[in-house]
Image (tube, rainbow, N blue to C red; front, side):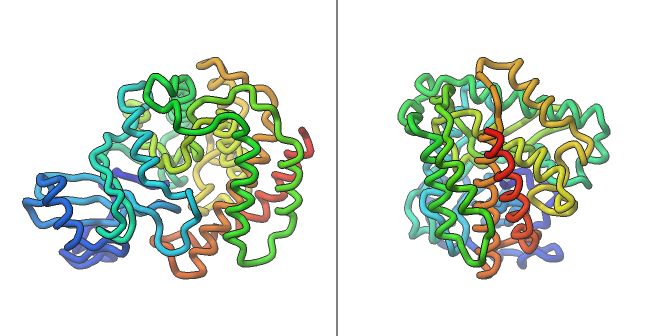
Length: 365
């Protein structure tokens, strides 16, 4: 949920940014400079500066500059980190594997698994020019035609991802496709238990209903992004194109309908909610924001690949459960003062409507 195109973000020395030479929270520039002098010397010849790139709700992303060189650094969030949810090596592996395919990804530069350098594992990737569309202030000026083009490009890119043969790109062992959907329910139930900080009516019922109605998953074995949505893409609008798919921390091999169900959760569930306005997770997508309805997204996707789409009620319900857990985890970190950037104070409001809609959807299966 982050944006490597930092053109519009405040840099060091501007109002609201750290002083020139200061390190944003989560980075130790002195230790990082020493490490880079041994492993990426092109980044060590000039004073290193770092800017936190706003927008991420999970892993932290920074733009590093050293003279004329720019790269993007990704690291896990501060503080309360859910097990397996912020695996830097996993992100690095998948963008490296997808580089020669039709799926646009940032170029992988370097992986550091040593948590001693900056306090957590991290990796470097190329900076890709483009824009992340995450709110109506950006999407309204596009006009109806370009919003439609952007939506269709988003779906074409997802279809291209799901068409990649994992074995052909070295990802045959990237996940365990058998039982993927059942494991998703168990995994997010476990994440929920580690993020509880307040009563959450209905969420345990949703978990149990999902666990008792898991579909067979006829499409298992595809590469699944795990959090595919508009503001996890870098795009251009003149012409319209997707330049890079971002945030691969939850990628695995599994059922691609999970990606579709979660995308519809963002698009038709949150995007159709009164809570969407101004909320950093839900603002700027879906029919309320002038985009095509979710049914058109699925039609476009189905026409570009060989995935059997079928009924998606269960997968939307899983998307609601998963996103409710993610939002609750972010809300919990926010209450502990462990989030960086603006907009986190409202994310907890999304949990209740997600649970309510998830219960309705799972009862349709």
